[in-house]
Structures are given as C-alpha cells and as structure tokens.
Image (cartoon, rainbow, N blue to C red; front, side, top):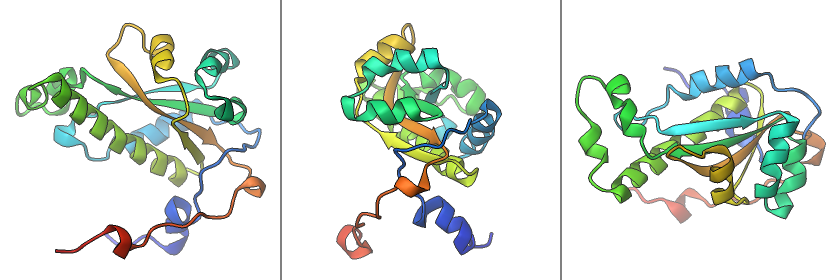
Length: 195
C-alpha cells in the first residue's frame, strides 16, 4: 500500500470540519448505500458489525425526529439533507453465524449484559467513524452530534428491537461559507506516550 496524497488526507482529515449549515442539495439513497458498502469493510471484533442505522430523509421522518432534538440542534438537523441515527444492536451476536462462521463466537460476547453492551457499543462506534470517513471520501460533509433524547429516539425509531441509539450525524453538502475556524487540537505529546 502507498500513502494517500495530501488532497485525499485533506478531504478526510485536515480540511474536513463539522458542519451545521447545508446546501439545498439532495443526497441520493444510492450514495448512502455506496458509503455503507465502504464502511462495512472496516474491522470489528470477530467481524461482529453491531452498528444499525436509520437514515432520516423524508419530511415526515424529520418531523418525527424533531421532538427528540435538543433546541440547539433542531434548525441544522431540519435543514440537513440526511440525518443518520447511528445505533448499536444488543443482539448483534445473532448474526455471528453469518459474519464469523468458522467459530462459535457468541459466547465471547454474552458473558453478561454489560459485556454485550461494551462490545456492541465499542464496535458500533468504530463502524460509525468508518462511515463518516467513507462519507467524506465520497464527497459528503458530516455534522455529528449527541444533543438529543436517546430514549425517545429508541421509542420512536427502534421500538420492538434491541437497537439503542448512540449519536446522530447530519450528512450532506456543507455550506463552506459558514464554517468556523479550526479549533485547537491537542498535540501528540499532550495525549500520547511511546513505551
């Protein structure tokens, strides 16, 4: 493998920002499928793939989501072409016979409810991060957020399942004229140690 060039790194990391303002430009459902097909190739523990996602696009679905949002997130979410509800499946292990067929891995993840939660939550977070990078790679901007009533989202969108909402992410084509200056990042020496 070779290193990505500076343009690709800029699109994925250096120049990419969290967006709150959106152009009135549709995100086709076929593009969401393409992005997921990239995302699903990312690594998870025993290939468990616990992320579950609902993509909010229609006016009806947006209005259903509206009462779940904290006030500061309403306007930008209603304006976004798509809002992803990234969730984790507390029964992800039921798919392991398909995704990890050579070993019975279910006991690895079902020692306790807390153990199941830890693996589901951790690996779904990985997958959601992969999705955001894949979305950027495909030309979309992202606006992840956690300001919402998770229990209400679960009641409205995941009733009757073992899915639990994790965070929301607005997706679309960001209005580049309305982004903020880059905020400071902590340095390697402030956060890392090589031993």
